[in-house]
Image (tube, rainbow, N blue to C red; front, top):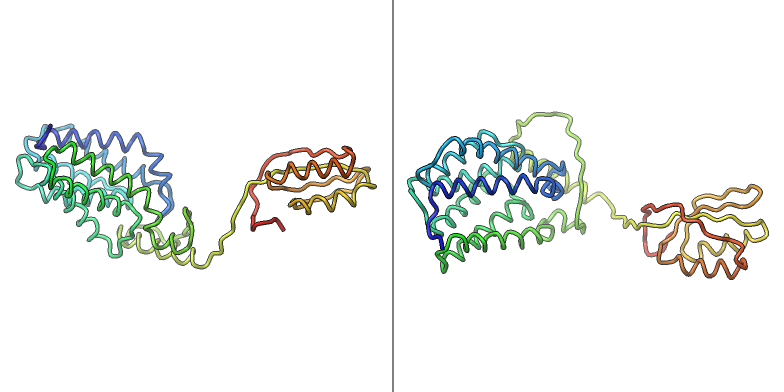
Length: 305
């Protein structure tokens, strides 16, 4: 049981946290679809917290205040991208809450986590739910709730992490832009004709959020389904039957060649293949065989047309 976080323990927590972010960097990048779907959230967070690791390894903090201050200052200087800025703000608020403390208990650290979340939210003019802000807020809230009854720091943090995982799983439902559009995942490509970061982190988030909202509102949804790419060859005497059977069984003809024999290329929902094979064999007495040439996604609206 550990009831106090010392400067040395805080340092170890940051080092282990940084290692976890680096190890999961690509997975975090893959989560990055809103507000700026540029797939670099994990990379930016890893590089940002890496600056804190470098500074912490140069010192042996004697107080939790010192450890938090060194971490926050390094993150502020080394913040990369929107995610790096938000990460630095989380630690900045946490550091302020721990100012003057030699050690802190579970309740004090949980409160400091909430202060960090508050600092991050205040820096964004229109905070979007379903983002890292949401996960941080709900994790901090769970930490405070648990610390009200539990003194063991490790157990409090375990509960906070659990709440963070649960929040992450629900982020898409929480995001009004994606939820309103009726999509469960989205990539919005925004083209900027002016570079730089004059808008600041908050300004860029607002600009890209608005762009994503407009794009999703204007777009119409198309359901895509993976289909089989098929071909067959038949005599001219069988062409009439074959040409009718393919669409009757859900196939969509992509091309027809009239050579010595008639060659058809079409795509088909895999679920319809057994029925088509049976009807084709019956209609042609086994003289037409389907050849599978690959797979490709096509628009789907109940039936192909």
